[in-house]
Image 1 (tube, helix red, strand yellow):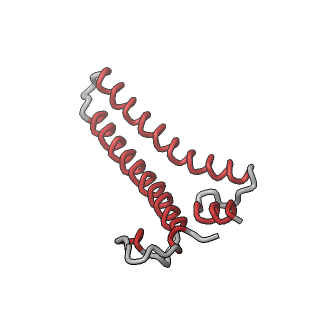
Image 2: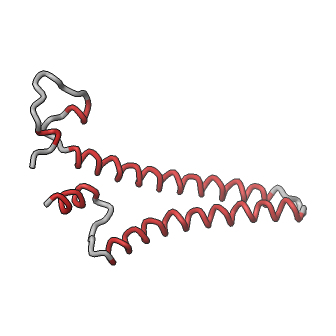
Image 3: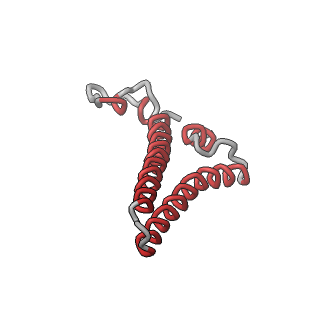
Length: 117
């Protein structure tokens, strides 16, 4: 079975990593998914840090106002819940892969190679 990147299109050449005839589209897709998951995890952690700091500043600036204190507490709680969801999603994905017998479910390139064999 030939991959699309291995077919001869004559003078037609792409640009960037998509135009590399020696590379595999599966590897490119795998890197894209892996990078996207990593980037979204980092964004989630940065967002949690921002929400935690703004909640802490809100608590310090509440000055005894119960409503402002409650709002800051809710902000911190929602940030913690978001962080737990981001981390739990990675663990759940790994657990699902283990239960279905896919040892490294986050390695998309390896999954495609197992499917095409």
